[in-house]
Length: 487
Ligand code: NAI
Image (tube, rainbow, N blue to C red):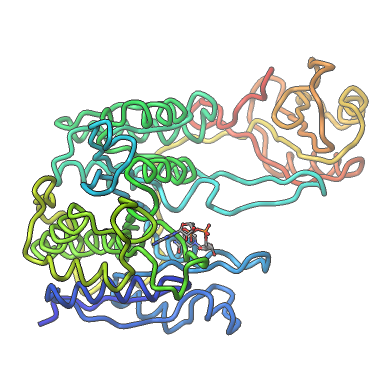
């Protein structure tokens, strides 16, 4: 009897081969799931759906709440967005959970040194530079906006601590770059400690992300759960994949309030597509996360033990393992796992985890867009404007022109180029591009209005090609903008 029905998208490249392998193992283990197969990815882009998914596929996932997907190809250079990122963002799967654990039979530098790896990365999955909000400000200057929000950060931190509490993790570490990106990563870090207060039994600490990179390769055993912003989390989790044997062993779960997506971290491997050579392990490990999400603990443990036994015995596909033992093709490797169902490895058995899922069927109906807002009683005051404009003049020649537009009660505070102040003081050694930022503020820090600031930018636009503006605000007497380097 099927406990649940889930959506399956086989994906592109090796996707159908590894998905078939995993579903064959699920069937052999009598996993009580039934499937509704949907089309997403390359074939759908080719049919003219620029989002990479059809309305029917979208409806199926929104009805079933769980998508198990193979890797999907994003056509290069056609301007379409990655279906993988679109799916994660559309369905608000805000927490990307990735496990990295040493496996007997998968040799790495660390396994040879006798250092076991067992850590979990929780990556914020919606925001950061993956907001994908990019603009060319001049033909030479591209800008990417990096969104870090309070509600988005709270969500992912709560997920990490809740997971730690339910599954017995001892420590949660927040990795960040708040020493440099004081407002964005600063907000991510501040919300981390806000959430940590509600979980006193779990040790919490933070680390600068470059230090994390160094320590992950020198002392990985220092970490248990690490929570990061989107891009930093993406990079660090691939580093962790390297610690345990590569992308062939990196599973991933994208968890949201209503919908969750399970997939391998690797791509479509077009170089080995159709050759029956692909390693299905990463997708199978993602499948364990899916089964545990659905509280199918016994099935997850049964299959995980058979996989671990299969690997421990030296079975391997061509991409890893002992070169002295002939490699198996995808079909043979899958058969070996099925033959081992019911057996357990001599060491490192499947972790007996409790059900941690908050998942419930049917998917909670959503009748209107969900608004995430958490700012409470903030007093907001507008004190100025940053105007981004194009010019190939030097800053000392630009300043008199900008100063012409300054009305009584306002001042031109500085001119910056690529984030570094170049006027009123700067260095001749600061190389500039043709994109400047002029910062105007009220002389005494008193409030002004948006209309007043837009008028000022209109005036500046009479002399310069204005690309964008940013209003300068105080929130509860704290500036909501950063200083330029050198200001
Ligand atoms: P890739 O992960 O597909 O391949 C990198 C290398 O790893 C290749 O040599 C490949 O043969 C090998 N490899 C990957 N998975 C393997 C497996 N299961 N068994 C054996 N060998 C394996 O990365 P690449 O080449 O950068 O990307 C190819 C395509 O995949 C692109 O179109 C990209 O957009 C897409 N992609 C999709 C992802 C997803 O659906 N989540 C993630 C990453 C890439």
